[in-house]
View 1 (cartoon, rainbow over the protein chains, first blue to last red):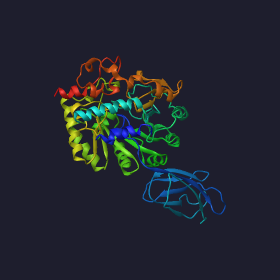
View 2: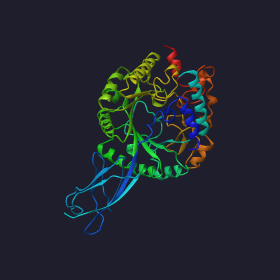
View 3: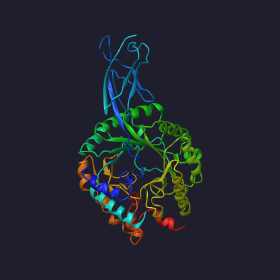
View 4: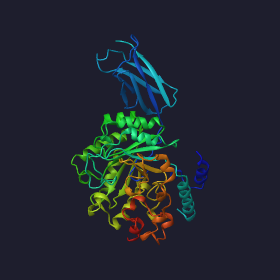
Length: 121
Length: 350
């Protein structure tokens, strides 16, 4: 940032970083949260075709998403050191019947793209 | 703050004004609302039958911003943003542009399912309005079920560590005696931040004396906030609505600095380009339907960045002016001959 140096000087003069963090009177706090975009596509290992209605969830999080009509999903999730991601067929025999799958990722960037193939039950 | 700190802070504000990095943008994405409160922070005089602004129109405006700064946050406001059925799409498009997004809501329609889809779409911060315990909240919100709904919304928002979440309360005659009760209620719910306002006599609030605090009550409010800040159980603060003299830094983390038009911009429902939604609409600097948003931000906004015009009325000879700078921009309405509320004056009356 072009003015970073100047700001650091001001900060050093005993005033706090609060000067750079603010919120408008009728606004929200600013968002400094770390998150990543977890996206991908779920297909059938037998046919290679996309699967709709598969639930994607992350261990220790309430967030989840269902794949759309072409098997895609995309969700922003809090940045963590590792992710245990669960893929579940929750709509019985609608859209086929597939075994659940768990995937663990230990190294992550700011976005993850996954190609997941599910086996039929 | 000592004299040296005040001096440095004034220099800092001057420099920030010269730089005027935009990193906080309100988008008044709808003027529809599911409540009819006795007071509304968005001025609330617009016709609720006005259609929502199409997402594409807003995106064209923000696409003129060359490189958004690191924490550029788009704040969706209204009306009630949750009435838009394309809110998730709005959020995803904002995130695609390297910006973050947040939302101000009355909580009425905030369910577990909605929170899940909003988080998936990259929602990062949230403000929920709570205007007292059950009776007081329902009175101001003008809806019987309002407290029950907001109670659930607060539980949900507090349950996710991802959201930078706070609760705001407009302090008035009905909830003034409940401040301790609200504080206990929020700490029990593990809410981390609580922001308190007073109500400015504008819009539909203007003729309702029950909404305003006396000078004595205002001072008590400052004392309450200062005490609670010392307890450090929850981040309690006075909003940035005005300069409060000796209470500066006791009731908020930083000293007063109205950043409207300096770091804060807005796009209103009719395309007007301005700063905070509660600022008099006559301050609009352009319109996204006729002007390039970034050009307007870079080259106009003089009344926001040079506030010498506020040296009038009671501000003209005020000794606090160099630190106050005419207080908040939203306190200048109509003819702009005098500040609507002077918090420092109020405190000196006691």
